[in-house]
Image (cartoon, rainbow, N blue to C red; front, side, top):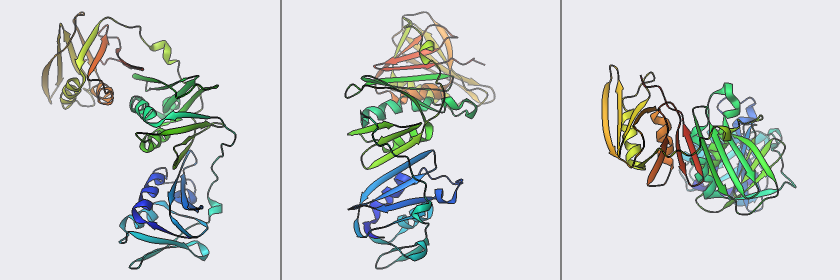
Length: 363
């Protein structure tokens, strides 16, 4: 195998795939990236057996072939390489040479045959999704995923597709985020799968602000085809909780506030939070909101905001991180928070979106 490529092009390709390479793989080959030549490009592939990602980049093919190279070492060499253009050549015994007129590296690779084959999705129906729409939905839900491994079923996002709508749901038991959008066209299949957090992260990292992707479902596997980048993933097996049961009915006790003002005020109050004293206090009065924080042996803060509110006065505590997560990802200038009682969840609703957050006990 031999090809000529621009350094920056190769750097971007390596960085696209090497995120899925774990530092302590179960098999030595999983530390490597597979490089395969095609007609006028190369395909780079990496996997940890749960998620696989590949990308295609244009190069000048001088000789066809395939090899696997150590992901981190190869990436570091390319990043520090002194020339803008370089050659990559393979020799006998899996020796890989990276060189230019002024610099040369030789590293040992491993044969292509040792690299695990990724599952194929032939004859599977494809669902077309707008990339910016999915990116927005992920930004509104992914922060609510649980990282508690004892509740593995919550360690991902529920993807539901029914006819012409797509719904994403995430929860960690203390908050629930639901985003729903229309598909480009109606599909004659129903889908309900749980996509792991690592896959969600890689998908979000590679989604663009324009264009479309194809979603294909196999046997406990999912494929996202973004064009130059393809992401394959195992699914989380099990039954996602019935989230619809916990969505409260609409409440007339609605607090309307400028979103960015509230976000900044909550962040300021959170500066005094400690692991034992996390909750920020919200005191709601007629057209006034007082946000305060009092932490023993640390300090106190108090801030007033003008709001629209005509309901009953109440005091409620929230985790500032949970409240800040939704506020920084919504794009509406004003946000409405439904507050029915000090011990009942707060609810934020926007177009095609619901966020439910449980209150915290105030110390």
